[in-house]
Amino acid sequence: MTLKNLFSLKELEIHEIVRILDDAQAFRDGAAVPNFTGRIACNLFFEPSTRTQYSFQVAEERLGLRVVSFDPGLSSLTKNETFYDTVRTFDSFNPDLLVIRAHTRYYDELSGLVRTPIVSGGDGTGDHPTQSLLDLLTIRQEFGGFEGVRIAICGDIRHSRVAHTNYGVMQRMGMDVCVSGPEEYMEPGLRFMEFEKALRECDIIMLLRIQHERHGGHEGMTDEQYHERYGLTKERVERMKPGAIIMHPAPVNRGVEIAGDLVEHPRSRIFKQMENGVYVRMAAIRRSLEGELWH
Ligand code: NCD
Image (cartoon, rainbow, N blue to C red):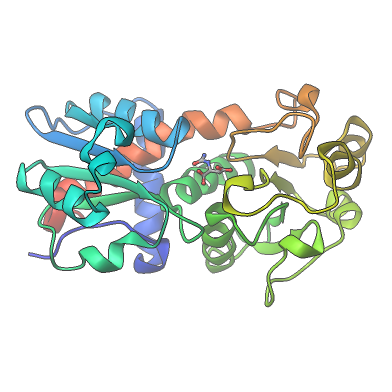
């Protein structure tokens, strides 16, 4: 039996992505949820996380699972145990699900060696599949579909797994995708649009946090200068297209990529994204636990 892991959305056919979104929407609309009482999930977050980690936990509990949460700082990682041995340890407990977030593309070294299905909570600068699923659900709720919806993903593209997963999957879904922000954070091969033009023309402005922990920060630019040049300010929000929305995976750095007052602006869907996160994670977990039975 092949394990229903979820490491990257590239592994999924479009119809499988749509099935997860449909399940998530149904859960949100009050449909009965599968009952996995008696099953155990182990959440292994080797990188810090608020939303992803705890919304996975809420999703697991809504499905009846019991949850074991790993704390790297209190674990044998502090005794030089490796990532691989840590994961194999949890796998040997025979849980029903592992949710893993780590600093690198961790899953290659686990391939074929772990018998528990794994859902990724993010791998370094690589992929963040459930974040993109919740972004897609939010977009579908807003625009009724994906075809031709224009999005500008703005900020630290190069170090953002959210940008990487979204750029690819949103193009596959038929969206018109571009990136914007300081040149040093752009990536070759991605379609670039000036921030002012993106504000006027795009249906979605998706802002990203500068991933300071992955590099030295924006050389030569203070937070204030970044805000002035590339941040969403009260003045800039006025120039957004009618009906356009603001998205952000969070954590938000208020006053840097977005003015604090705009986090809960009528155009902002930031907290709606978080709410959708629970439902898409429920749907993704269902897929992994149902295995071969999931179509
Ligand atoms: C993002 C992440 O961890 O990749 N946050 C999230 O999961 N919602 C974005 C970030 O850390 O900036």
